[in-house]
Amino acid sequence: MKTRITILLLALFASVNIGIAQDNDQEECMNNLSIFDSYVKSKKYDDAYGPWKIVREKCPKFNRAIYVHGEKILKDKIKKSTGAEQIAHIEDLMLLYDQSREHFESKYDLGEILEDKANLAYKYRKELNKSDQELYNMFDEAFKKDAKNFDSAIGLYTYFSLAVDLYDAGAKTPADAQKLFDKYDDVSELIENLINGYTKRLNVYAEKEEAGEALSKKEQQYKKSYESNIDVFETKILTSMDKKLGDRANCEVLIPLYQKDYEQNKDDAVWLQRAMNKMGEKECTDDPLFEKLVEQKNKVEPDAKTAYYLGVLKEKQGKMSEADKYYNQSFDLETDPLKKWKLVMRVAEKNYKRGNYGKARQQYMEALKLNPSNGGPYLRIAAMYAKSANNCGDTNFNKRAVFWLAANEAEKAGRVDGRLKSVAAKTAASYRASAPTKQEIFSATNAGQTIKIGCWIGRSVVVPKD
Image 1: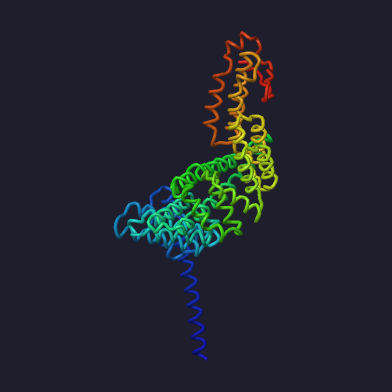
Image 2: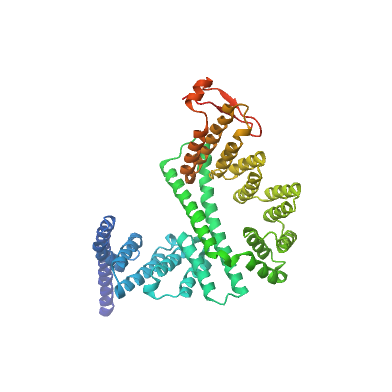
């Protein structure tokens, strides 16, 4: 009996001591969290390291600041150190990334963590003695395990760049080339999805502004961020990927490759689509294989893109009425607004280059409805007005008045699309410089009057009063 009482008392005392110890740890962690948080905010990372390390080791689940601030602290340590010490800090940051997901899984996606580790390894590849294959495998793991959260612009470009480097270092067989093209398509499609996501959010703001509603300060910040992300992916990453791929995917490479693989893939809609797209992008549309791919894709799985390329083929044959029929069919078949926008813009550009301005304007206006946050069509419409000035007025004054109309359209581009604000402003200013001067307006005594612009333009413009 006494033995049982003794055991119970020992257990009780032990639990009390554990509780006290836990309370002490919690209090210590709270104090040190406050200390390292203050140091990090002041960018005193060396001073933050000690108290941060205590909290990380004693209370790893205590607060997410352990991992948010810890990344900054360790990156500073890595930057300031060399040799074995630097490698130790790099490896510790790798461990911290793993621990962040272990203790706060809902806040850290797997793709994000794997991508951060791969980017870190690539940055310090010489220090870590990492081969291209090892680095590629790290990025590939992120892509294969959680592609939707693999969204770093630098990471995606590095991933593809390594694929090209490995191809160049290898045997460069047709099978290797096909794998490389597939990787290009995989990464490009992922980037397109990211761009589409940002664009859809931007369009909400564009429609709100078009309705006369002002954006809140937070919405303006989001808008600027989305525009910046789109600009990075479109003008930097995709462009850099195309440059990196270069002549490895020219017509001389693509045509024999697709000819060789055609029979075994002729019923594979994805293979046909990618082969057709690649030949279309690289201007290999004169080769009979392109027509063969398009017709087969249309047979296996007709869709908007196939209809578009059928239009391209008819246009090359000089059958414009049939081409337009297929272009319109592609618009009707496409249900995704952003994919349809791309098709409409492609056809509008064709009409613009042909000088078919009335048709082009109609299509540019349709493009603006589909994707209101992209101001490119306004600049095209402005350019068409400016090019038509000499043909669309009955007097010299009225001809030059067309430039006011062009300037107004150019300014719209900057209003809806922050990425074009500077270009739109410069373009509008150049058009206004070609319009009648204040002295000419005074001599014509028509300030404030409305001038009707003839020919295909069919619009009116108000003469400025000052």
